Length: 296
Image (cartoon, rainbow, N blue to C red; front, side):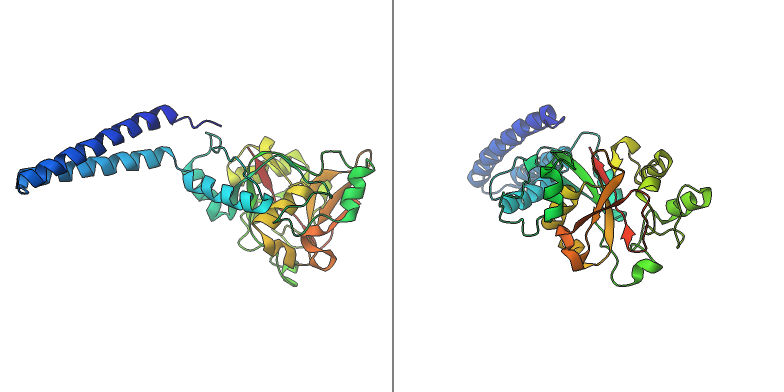
C-alpha cells in the first residue's frame, strides 16, 4: 500500500538534498573566511533547517520503525524476504499508542499457505493432526490453514497462569467493564463478573457483544472477530511464545462445515500453540476464555 504522504515526502527529500549541497558550499566559505561569526551563524541555520526537514519526513513516516521490525521478524520466521506494506491510512500513531495502553499490538501477516508439509525456520509449533485432518477431510474450510495478508491488531496479553482465571481473568483487562455490562444485560453468563471465562461461542458471536467490545478499542465491529486457529498459532510462534505456557484454552473463530461446533485451543498440557480441539458452540468452561483480533 502506497504511503498517502509520498508526494510530500518526495518534495521534502529534494529540499533536504538541496540543503546538504548548501552546507558543503557554506563550509568551504567558512574555512576561507577564517570562521567569521556571520558565516558560522549561516552554517548553523542551515543545519537547523536540515534537522527540521528530517523531522518533518519522520512525521510523515510514523510507522517506519514498525515496518522494519515486522519485516525482520517475518524474514527470520519464514526464511525468505517478506514485503511489508504501510499500515492503512486510517491508522494513526495516536491510535496505536492508545491500543498499546490496552495491551493490543499491531502486526503484519503475509498471505502464506501453512500446510502441514511445509517447513519454516521459525515455525517450531505447528497445529496438531486434528486440525490438519479436519482441513484435509473437508470438516474445515480448505483455506483454514492459509494465513490471510494484512495488518491485524491482536490482544498481546498473556493467558492467566494457574488458578488465576477463576477470579481475576486476564491481567489489566480492558474489556472487564464491558463484560460486566453484558452480563448485567443478560447477553452473556459467567461465574465471575467481568471475566472472559465461562462464555460460550454462541454468546460471543452476538452482534451486541462484539459491538460493545469493539467500542472499547474504538474500531468498527465489522473488523473485529476471534482469531482463527492458524492466526493464533502463527502470531504465537512469531511474537507471543508465552501463549504456549498456560493450561487454559481460548476460542477460535473457525467453525466446522455443516456442524454447530467450533475450534478452541492453547492448552500447554496438550501442546500449547499446537493444541486445537473441537467443542459445541454452547460449551462453556472455567478454563476456556477468548481474545479478540481486529483485521484492517
